[in-house]
Amino acid sequence: MEKMEILSSLRITKTVLAILSLVLLSNIRVQAQGILLLPSEKSSQRDLSTSQIGEGDTTNAHDSILKFVNSSNFPNRVSFPRGFLFGAGTSAAQIEGGSHEGGRGLGIFDELFSGEDKFATKIEHYKRYKEDVQHLKNLGVNSYRMSICWNRVIPDGTLKGGINKEGINFYNNLINELLNNGIEPFVTILHLDYPLALQKKFGGFLNHSIVKHFKDYSELLFKTFGDRVKHWATLNEPEVQVVYESVDNVGNWSMESCQTTKVCTEIYTELHILLIAHATASKLYKSKFQAIQKGEIGITISSESYVPYSSKLEDVDAAQRLTDFTWGWVLEPLFHGDYPQIMRKLVGKRLPKFTKNEKEMLKGSIDFIGINYYSSHYVRHEPNRTKVTGGYFDALANLEDINAEGKTLGYWDQYGGTYVYPEGLYNFLLYLNKKYKNSKIYINENGIPSIKIPNPLNDEHRTAFIAAHINATKSAIDDGVNVRGYFAWAAFDTFDFYDGYSHNMGLYHVDFNDCLKRIPTNTAKWYKKYLTHDLDQ
Image 1 (spheres, one colour):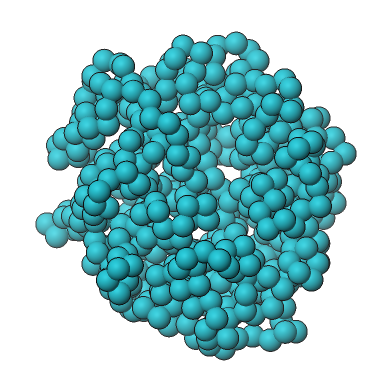
Image 2 (cartoon, rainbow, N blue to C red):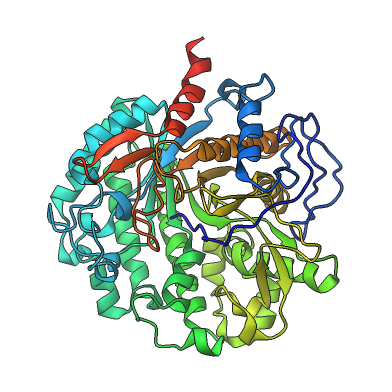
């Protein structure tokens, strides 16, 4: 799910430097206890800095990047590790449609967006999956990140309620179609949406009872598709999901007035149960299926680099706290069996405790970390909880676009409505590598919308974005990070949970005025050329 904030446009008044064409990487180092921009001990062979480009407009930044892309210094596809996955992604809830077809049960988003235009049909991927696979093949990707709709295969979320054979057949056919065209499926088990019946029955992931049903659902997927699916992610951005449901209170399901009081409990309960559900499914896969099926299982989190707003110790500490309250909240239990100590200190009794058995089940429950990266932020200390925004109230930290010296992270992209900072991806990759001891990493989402251009097909700003982040990925690999895949978001225009279809996120634009015709954007054409050129030599 893309999480682009539409920010007010700011003009950057820094000296023009050609992005990425320089030889040396901007001096960066990732501290073991936070993500900070400090002098580097080891330099990569390419410059990643976008914080020094632009003369007040986006064009200079784009031109500099695109010029570098066509130079001999830009890393070609064959320079990446053997077996590296280059792909694009979507999720079932954002493209499938067919909400009332093929025996599908309702999901929570069917209720949330019941009045939204085009939500029930979306881009009709459910009906047009064969056509879409051919578009993916034409794109040149060797992997496709997708998700399975729980309520399409188990309509009410429980095995007792019955398995939907039509739903099973659809995913069997889709997976086979992908493999027959040389594309590996990279499957997410739960991408935010889940059966509405489970929400109505006992409150969804606020009730521990859902763990059993998630385990049953996962086992059905492993049994049915695991002979062909070799990459499983249990959850997509669980930390975003709980903010969405418990803090933003989308759907009005929360019993708390969390946004008003800034004292939240449900958010911690919900993520706690999501982590136990993940660990339960992972244990099942590793003990019963992995040795035979030869696959891997992991989790996907949102990501960005958090940079202190100033050199003051309070802001440095705030950046680290927010790191612990976001990525640490999910990853620390999966590597060490418990939440970060600072969370225990600041959240107190509202933070649930894992049992001894749960701790053991959590530790080592992932074979890889999936990350979704879009942009980065400065972090400023905010001692007054009532003035904290963004959902992580107990972290006592706020995000800022401009730091104490008036600087921004990267450049403002007027066509995408966000700041572009590939250096932040590099920083975050190095942080994970050092913090979690050379873990395998996949970049599962990376992209930018097209919201302020007359023709969404002319999306050169997105070509610049993706190219700069591919370059940042290769620089991290060169510096020892175990990155094994990169997926552009999104393969097709997707229904965004905040902005509908207004963002035009697809490499393939979908024309709703012409029978949902899929049209490759200029970025799709560039990505195809990049992915296929060296392989054709």
